[in-house]
Image (cartoon, rainbow, N blue to C red; front, side, top):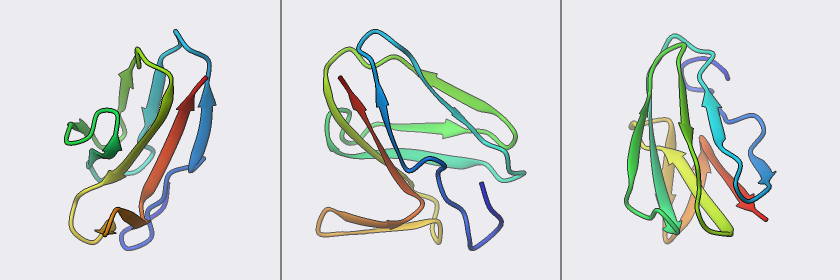
Length: 91
């Protein structure tokens, strides 16, 4: 959600039962690039098109951390993310 310079994930954190899919919905007219930056899926990147969706089914329990890696949307320093950052927990 948001506008240029003020994008964020809503909610920033979620709990997901194992076996369920996670879906991101982009309600803006700007595309985003989701990059996973800790533990599970670390280094994987996915596109989230403008006004589009992206769905992924995690196979393992644990925390998954992601951010929009387009410059200006979030920053990552020493493993800490600020800006357009989120996480979900597979139970």
